[in-house]
Image (cartoon, rainbow, N blue to C red; front, side, top):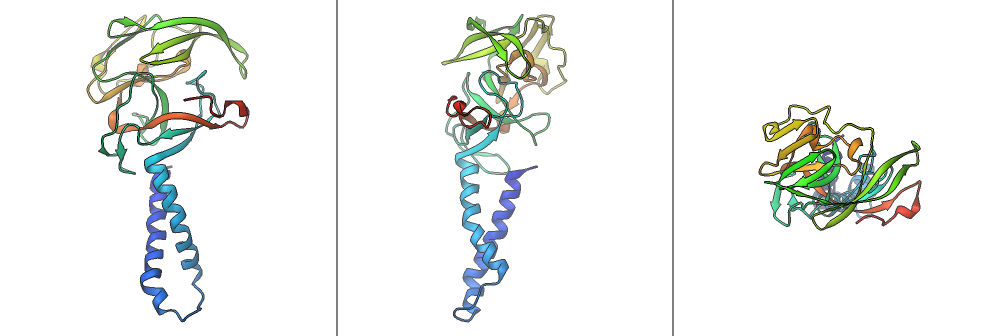
Amino acid sequence: MNFALILFILLLVSGAIWAVDAFILRKRREPGGKDPWWVEYGASFFPVILVVFVLRSFIVEPFKIPSGSMIPTLLVGDFILVNKYAYGIRLPIINKKVIEVGNPQRGDVMVFRYPEDPSLDYIKRVVGVPGDRIAYQNKRLTINGQPLEVKAVGDYLHPERLYYSKQFVEKLGEVEHRTLNDEDAPAFIPDATHFPGRENCLYNNSGVICTVPAGHYFMMGDNRDNSRDSRAWGFVPEANIVGKAFFIWFNFSDLKRIGSFR
């Protein structure tokens, strides 16, 4: 469901009702006459829909985390806020950038339209920016020939599935974050598709090595062995960017998570 398109249509309809009433119908009604029901509801909803549309399109948009690909940073059921202007001001619906503000940086957690089905929103961490050579070999990440700083910490217990994953603190760009690996998961990528730009990638038994093309980004989940990401379906084009995730505003299961992510 394209909620942005539905909201835009509602905005146009309610705005048209408000305008017709304000400039035409209201002048023809007798003083003190009651507004028709469709005018009363349509015109009263217009300012509310306008505010929601502007906030959601240009400032901040809420999302709910649907899967465990970003554990332990983000958990299933987290409600997050996404900064819509961090990577530039975009026209709603067509998502075309009109004002340059900034670009995704390594370590950012970014929401984007899934390249294989743009009707779906995905969330992953930015690992590679245009021109980077990304190597994920034997579950170790290297960027432009430099292995990332990694420190093992205590194992992570998945509360719902009751099993442990190896947990690490990884420094990606200026961002330190935690990642997970499962010892019994293979290093190779079993489900890579024939995505645009696949010629920039080399797959082997140890994983994958890719050079990120211009205007694209390489994304990975923090739950490395339970995330289907750029390793499998390729690069995220700049046109698919939605915004930068920055805040957990609610979680029904754990109120302590509110505000725990930046």
